[in-house]
Length: 409
Ligand code: ADP
Ligand code: MG
Image (cartoon, rainbow, N blue to C red; front, side, top):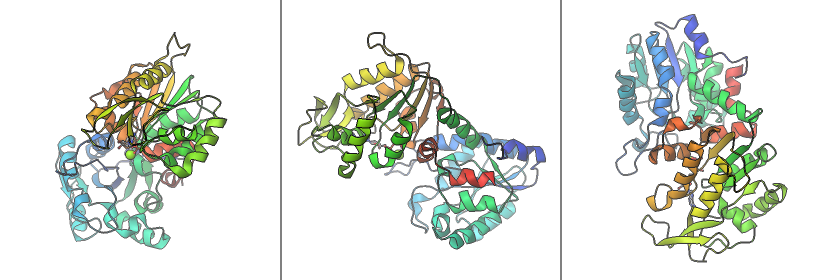
């Protein structure tokens, strides 16, 4: 990390006992649409080292986060209340929940905190000021948040690419440091943008090509191979002149993809077969078809077995294919609709190949990380599982991240 950024250890060395420390965390966990239960608590666990260090040191810890995309006003389906419960279980100490973010409840909860105790404020995005494009509106909200802390810790790596009040404006108002998670994320990602060990293989999937084109552009010169699956492969297949049926397609990106393929120097690997279904549904009839022969009425929901084998060979190395073991791997985006068991094989196969390779592997992306856990893979077989999808991609693109820049000042 940049030498000018102070870290949690610097803050701890000053002593935090009895001081109020405002922690911006990323507790934006996926919730079950029917029951509202937390389906993956990885992001909560990721912030425990920072919170544990602060409570142990006797700080009064005030945690804030966003969850989902409420529209600047309270919306019960996006309440952080269930997260407070789970956070308390994991920390082994009750978490005092404030039913608003900067209102009466928050003020009372923060005022009542004892040394070593933790409070969680209600969803930041219940307030227009959090995400406002207007500096004054964001600033006014940041003033209210900053009043809850004597120091500020940013441990919300998943949000550092946002110019939001809690990430960008609060650190301008309080002594600020990077938490353990942010520090680790930046250390790992900087090895990828620096001088990664080769072969360096990147696997991209997920749903939106337009979101990820910039990262493809930025990575092409540095990677040895770029494997593309998931919903985004169909725009590339279309660019190669293939019909893709009713698969996910971003028509206005086809030309850009064609251009990228031309400049890629053979580095880009696309699927050779796909699992095509009659409908976007868990129980839809489906079979494997060649990637250049998707029937017009069918939808591609996963990469096929031959593709998985080819991708695995590129990752793990294959004597037959004359490819070397990857030494560095970055993976973002599931290879198929892994949420439906019938279309999870591609993601599982690629994830297993990454886990088995002895490369240093980084998994970035909320859904990709969730897939690793949902498929029951051992998190320890990956070098690093990033908590930030957009943030890790923007970092790899070489963009300035507002939340990191704010810590540098
Ligand atoms: P991440 O969060 O890891 O960055 P994305 O958000 O870009 O990943 O994409 C994840 C989503 O992509 C998943 O919900 C998955 O179901 C979807 N997806 C993957 N393959 C396909 C496909 N062939 N068609 C439609 N959606 C897909
Ligand atoms: Mg996602």
